Image 1 (tube, rainbow, N blue to C red):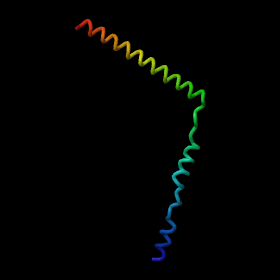
Image 2 (image 1 turned 90 degrees about the horizontal axis):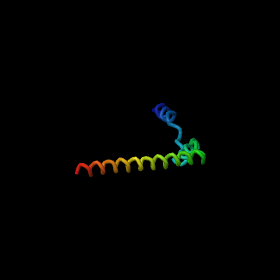
Image 3 (image 1 turned 60 degrees about the vertical axis):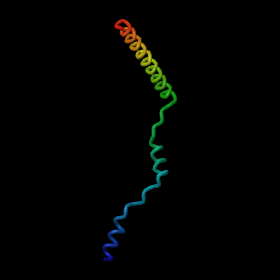
Length: 71
């Protein structure tokens, strides 16, 4: 019986680090973008957003015009 207790003690896992220590360790692994990269990507998102809006507006106008001819 004493041997079983010794085996249980040996099989214990090492203590896990705290939650906030784990978060801090993960934040150290992040590669943050530079200001130039953020600016380029923001410009691309704005450009494509406006372009998509214009495209939808054109398609909407064409459909309204077509329905106006039919009705």
